[in-house]
Image 1 (tube, helix red, strand yellow):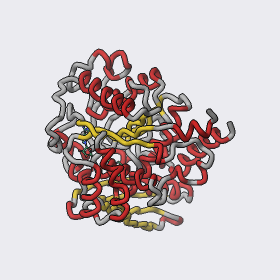
Image 2 (tube, rainbow, N blue to C red):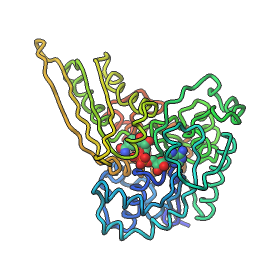
Image 3 (tube, rainbow, N blue to C red):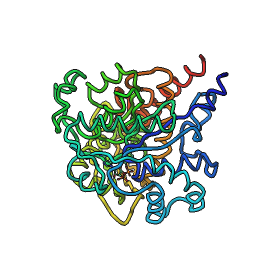
Image 4 (cartoon, rainbow, N blue to C red):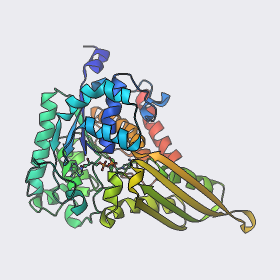
Length: 406
Ligand SMILES: NC(=O)c1ccc[n+]([C@@H]2O[C@H](COP(=O)([O-])OP(=O)(O)OC[C@H]3O[C@@H](n4cnc5c(N)ncnc54)[C@H](O)[C@@H]3O)[C@@H](O)[C@H]2O)c1
């Protein structure tokens, strides 16, 4: 079989943890719409000429499945978003509803073991497994993903976490190696739920991407496991809005030798993500990354303040208002203000598809451990201290060039 025929035959799975959420269901709608050619890949970085000639999976090669803890299906999730947030063309939803119905059959009950109260309160699926230990939960997740692979005869599966943000989790010395982790897998509080899903994916040898601020694979023992199992991993917390702008604008002030005196960012959003982030414990995880990025880019720490408030009526529309106070020549103080009004799911979903395609490619290339070239996608990129967006893009472009020169 020649290479082109093999590419066309390849079937891959995208397994979404949190499949029925705003981001998860928009990924499903987007993949199906791309497959039926009733939308363009606008918003997807992997559709840029930079990636011409790179062996990425096309939308028609994907089958979608996942875990969720709520009742429902993909069609009702996207229809709710379309109605409540006034997004998506109804003709597109109609054109792809058979794919959404088929893929909904691949959604399995997840677990809320050690997920925190705000997430546990969302769980209304009557068939959630009553797993009592991380070991049991991981085994059940692995079985679900293997079954998905077997039923659809998939060559590869990528697992992407797009579930609700859990409260921050403190790691201890006992999380330092896979040997230590394995000894504690009967202790229900030893790992947060996002890390159980990460463990299941990595232990199966599949690529794993954490699009959320939750801990996921950011545990030294799981990074060990990824290297052992040959599993590529990337995360964490997709950089889609206000933080993306911070990572573009802060380097500009530095390059012009303008001193930032303070950076205040107020964020308001109204979807289920916002509802979960309304709990101060869950909000803490998100705030940390959003607030510290400016100081991480500069070689000094200006006063910063970030807030996130849940305003129900906004639904999937997020507004950020930022006020940047800075000093120029002769000590003259000036201000930049911007407002960013973005649709959360439409900003995130194309990046999830990009990440899935790039992580699957890395899996085929036998790259294991942290994919540092994907830093530009994340607020807290694993294994990378570089937060300047243009430098992160250079890292990605250099990686792509190595693929094209082979
Ligand atoms: N939209 C963006 O621009 C953006 C950017 C960066 C990060 N994120 C992150 O992506 C995640 C998803 O955002 P969203 O707007 O789709 O939220 P959402 O609340 O609409 O969806 C989350 C889904 O996860 C499910 N879920 C929660 N806990 C689970 C568990 N333990 N197992 C399986 N499923 C579980 C929920 O039932 C829900 O369907 C959030 O963590 C958010 O912070 C989003």
